[in-house]
Length: 452
Image (cartoon, rainbow, N blue to C red; front, side):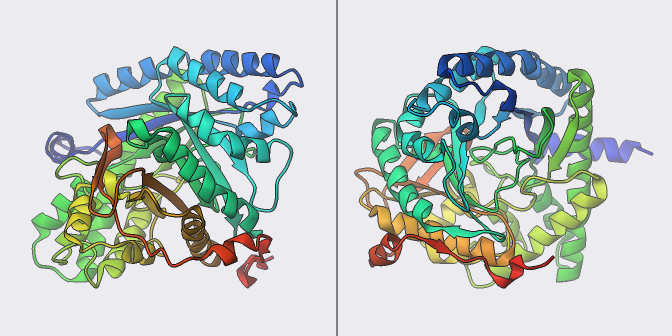
């Protein structure tokens, strides 16, 4: 039963500690929109999205106003477009991206994800063309986000796809160089991509999902940091318990919003993604949580251990609060979107090498990292391969979202604004992996894949 203390505590979390629901994301299947006529297929895609998501934004605003809970974004994820475009050989998939963009504009959402391909074991019809079209598609649309899954624990790593994605990222950054290379901030390369992720840029509506579903992503790094600050000097076990209890409260709020949105929209409730999603705002940082645990600066020795504790405690607290936890569910460490990460990168405490070690124990991967604009495509591909190997061997989701800052070098700044933030260009090891990348083929699945 709720009491006055619980209510006041939640009000304080919202007013003083940046507690919010980061996104309500409606997942929509486009499988019944497949048509050999590309114009008919695009029309079906547009019509279905507009029909299903017509009241999504209004519903989110109504819930936010009535419950006093900030809901920052309303988003849509759709079936990987490569699966739809595959029925239209010889047609550029870019027309599907533009249909998604028009539909998103019509219903008023912040982002639409699903300009995606799943190629962890090879290329199906539509996959190759979609991947090649990503630089054009994301530079000619406003809110379309893209993802490509190039590996999994069961399948191994598709190194042909890895090699292509390095060049795609470079081309996309060049295409949007006049807009701070923002196109690359809307593209994620995954290993073990989940089908129900509500967070952009990696959201897509997996083929195993219902026709339509509501997923919610919560936030709350500021709440966790404040709880630890109030606890003062306590041992590590107590720190873990505090994080668990706080994550429970955050997730309960997310479940409330998800169930209410589901009821009002007459759409099934899918999952709550309980990831701690930071923002560039002061007081809303995962890095500051780690520093509250006792680190002088995020990136210091001990950072990976602190992050492992945080990630595990968040999940333990969250799964007690909701029977339907999914998506990525952990602690995000997107450099440009986290005020503490930005500070740590600027002063040199946080390096790309340390970030890679941190990704072995948290969600999701090397995320929102500005790199020098002259970084070779093969180096970017090798960064993707390294992250995919961590995900594949550890049976976890990993991802890469790096932004080549065209015309800039290490130490310069790149700024996107909004939730995407901005920050320093980080130094990259440019010793060449080109021969390795150009071998192609597939890294075999590890022994962990044989669990049946």
